[in-house]
Length: 78
Image 1 (tube, rainbow, N blue to C red):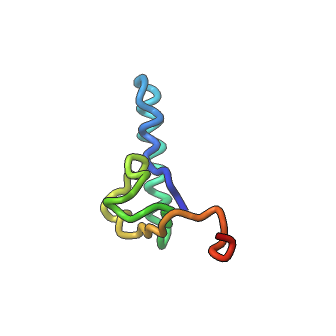
Image 2 (cartoon, one colour):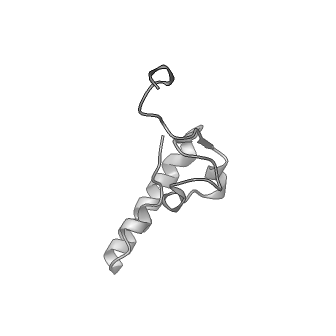
Image 3 (cartoon, rainbow, N blue to C red):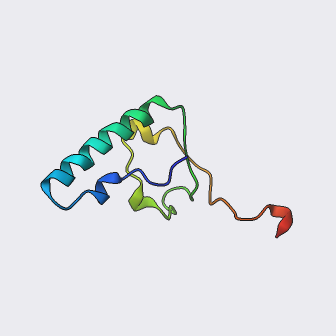
């Protein structure tokens, strides 16, 4: 389950931080390639709230399953 895959956004300032961001992206993309599915607790595109935080490669995008938001309460508690 993921709602943040665009780690490069956190490593924008400075040359060394940009290099670290690229290394982080290589690492998590390698992990994402090995999984069967990636569950994102958000609305499907184009209604995705965390769209700016998601940055999947095309092949990885095919594994993404948008489940909708996770409610804080069970349906019978509402």
